[in-house]
Image (tube, rainbow, N blue to C red; front, top):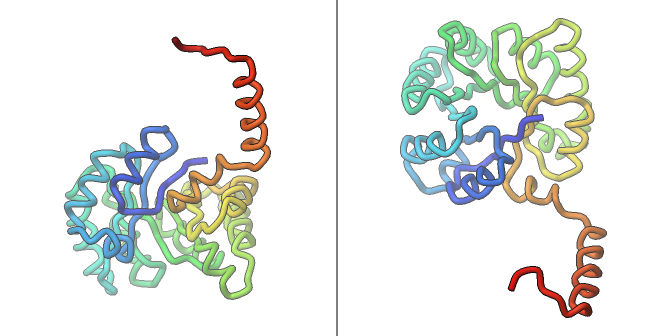
Length: 218
């Protein structure tokens, strides 16, 4: 499974990248706003840090506008994945942009039928939003399972990028189902390493080591 980090904060991306835990980055207009920086400047800096796909989102609502914005964003760096929404206009833009050899991330997916259309349009990534489905009392993982089955049935190359990840349990469930990628905030990725028994065991080891009066260095 690939790990994408969902942020536009450079320091957070750099820290995770140094551990080898980041295969790509996803951004959106809300994350750009939160960063307080110019979209071109911050996206270029992210692309310089990360070799993998960096998703940058269009804001036009018509296909022609999305295509124009997508091409402009793609000029920032060769690893840009253009994000378009899962609307009919977005699907038209996806078809054109992928036909030109560009990576496209079709976002805001909430149904298996939408995911099927995105794959037909040649999407590089489909981004189903797990957490937002959970928010309306649906099980977002059911959607990941449905998309996985459909894509496997017909051997689509579109990668399932599980998005709106809220917890470590979301990550585990997506991995068990077979999502190709997850994108999550830095705090969720870091939390994957946490377990109370690890902390308890480490504490016991350190206390016992202190009793020996030994040092490994010096």
